[in-house]
Length: 508
Image 1 (cartoon, rainbow, N blue to C red):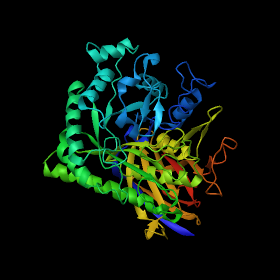
Image 2: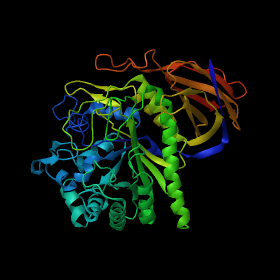
Image 3: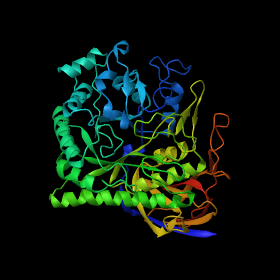
Image 4: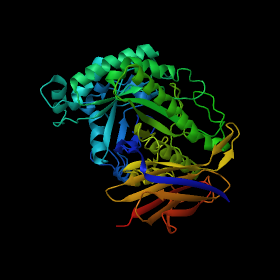
């Protein structure tokens, strides 16, 4: 049996975990909104048309923030089409996903939905076909209490209290060829800077996310250069740079750029994610040093996920949209990606899984029936529930496995969060080796005496097992007996292709 060892010390702190680390993403794409969260004719629909069963699952999942309304969709979206009486809203040809947009759901409807799901809203403005002036007007509509044209319009629409949305995205993936009115780096940087100025003049309290490079995939030639150009121009006006990354292990599934990875390459995904973030953090800090600035730019990883079994292809292509039926294997990847974000808690403050419902979603809805939890639901739920506190930096050695395209890569990814208020310590660990269990040894330093209080394991003999409407509990976590923690040392077996949550508490 292979062995892994990791040491965690209370003194080796990364940073406090931002609650927005457990965000998700809702876009007007496929059945995410219409036929997903919103379905007025469904028996579970509330008075506004949103499904109560979906809201209940979102609360159970623990999502803390939802980015809205896009995504590629936002680059062609006029927010004014989605406010006011529904009977007066126009139907538009939506170019990003080549469908008709009814505008039944807009800013006010979604804000109410998010409130009932106990999440905050991360708003995105249109910097494709939209203008800085229109972006500032949306801020005024949402965040100014009263006494201006746009705030009074909101009040006339039945929303007397301003929303006070804190976090705003300055467009979406503006360096992508598939984006409506894609911009060159200098074009976007100037537009984003002017939008940021006007939006902050409207509400000085907001935080702003500029578009960083939308992927580090081979073929995306703006990677790195784009980020430097945006940072050079916008550094003083922004708080975060956004990154997006989707992973795929089916070489027959192609999106915009050619992909060749297969299942053997899954251990590489987590190193790739680290390399991606290291590169962009270096760009942020280079510009910080060059400007002699005391300000630190953080990352908003506001789209991430596994797309092996999803259907959406960007670029205005007519296609069928359904939902991704995620496998246990996908859930294990989710766990490793979440661990990686936690290990960068000093720089990653926002992370939004994509999408929340149906296409890519952790929740899947039957238009005529129930809503179910995908296998990916559970690692997210675990980290959102127990990953509150200070992320700790680990040091150790992990087993490796040869991949077909990326050499030898580590097969185990872990993260650790200490909640000082509750004196609780949680270790998250995934083993993505498809064939071998391993023994994990953990040593805890500088803590009081620890006792195990929980061991939650997500595993199935079949790594391709998935939840369906007919068998919705085929892949679910199990509570296991946690081994004794002797002298603050623990030895535990992690099953092949498994996700694990180990919880401890300091004895008083």
